[in-house]
Length: 354
Ligand SMILES: Nc1ncnc2c1ncn2[C@@H]1O[C@H](COP(=O)(O)O)[C@@H](O)[C@H]1OP(=O)(O)O
Ligand SMILES: [Mg+2]
Ligand SMILES: [Mg+2]
Ligand SMILES: [Mg+2]
Image (cartoon, helix red, strand yellow):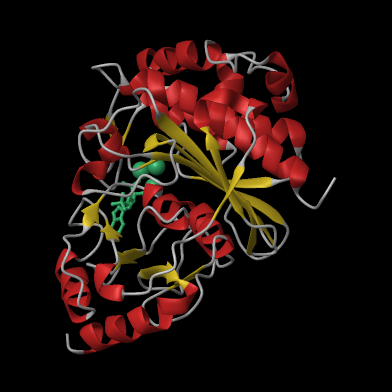
């Protein structure tokens, strides 16, 4: 077996299983939404997906740590919500029993489920094996009927070695270009659902999300951009998550005339990695917000392995080894390696004028 192939297999299957759970919630009217201390939403889908994925990691790699976005304290005294999540977790299995066996068996009790959620409490850092998990990235998109992603990455001594993104509402077809509609009013209908993956040094791939381990992965590559003015650039839907104004000024200076494609979640990283889009810009709106490692770890590796470069707005690589946040970085600039320096120059120019 090549390096990290076992980790990739477990990560892909765990993400695929978790998306079965999130898809059920996506189609429910009532998603069991709570507002967290920072006012951001969390649903029964986020909690359930975190439980299923951490269970699979701990069964296969008991000594590994996990930096997971969610924690179970709100559920320990809200039994109604806890039981709704348990019903989902208990009822979610991959249809292929061999794949289910690889994940190491079901969660047996409610307490085991709560403990699995809370096992995502690692402080992170640059020593040893630590997984970064976002059980639903783009929860606002998930609630709005946009894009969302189930995101998992393994870091070893602070370096991302394995990354997986499950995107239920993106097209399976790698060649389908992004359009203005790609990020809005989306669902997981026929032809949708893609799993992106990468191992450091071994390239990036995609495969249909619905088929567990049964379908072979295809290599993906970023699209060569010969004329930057024709590039498709992506950004967040939420104006509070990145500066639409700065991003539009940068696009304008690059001569890009097409409107940005706005979509939630790390679906943006997956989309540019397979050449459906070209550039992802995420410039800070707030001087104090620190990006979370689970919002970028998998996407950073997948884009770099597909021939891209990912830096912050100063040109530094994202540093995943300093804790639960990207405390040393500001903003994200992701583009094909051949044009990244051109994009970065304009980013610096626009930001320096502020
Ligand atoms: N002020 C902020 N700046 C940048 N990102 C943010 C901010 N607040 C929340 N986020 C995070 O951005 C991610 C979504 O990004 P996008 O807009 O590209 O879909 C979410 O994980 C969200 O965190 P949270 O999960 O706490 O809502
Ligand atoms: Mg997120
Ligand atoms: Mg999340
Ligand atoms: Mg969240």
